[in-house]
Length: 124
Image (cartoon, rainbow, N blue to C red; front, side, top):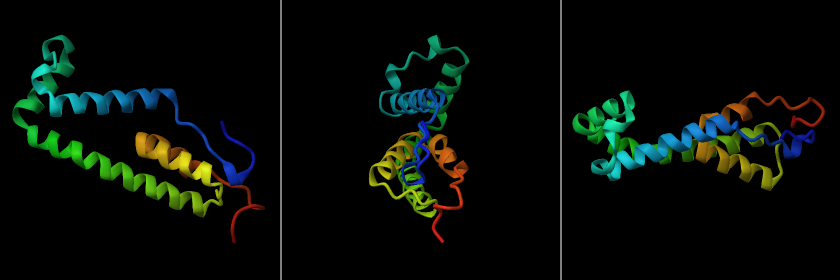
């Protein structure tokens, strides 16, 4: 929930995006590290696409999984920069933005980018 104080503005990303990102990363992890255990036939069209990627583009999945984490880390660092630019100086609030952006990426970063602090408390 957004607080009125610009120093401690934080909004949690929507539950929809939390679930989507978590399920996607979990499924990608499953496909990369335990592809033989994924029940492709039970997943319908998603299973067929997943099986195709595992069979023909495994390197893309493998390196993509390892690239996902530095990308999210860079997004989280960018969130710290945006917090500074928008006058969010509370350490705990900045850590919340860092953690949320690291875990959920643009679903979190978009909320921070949309935030418009009022003119009185914005740094000059």
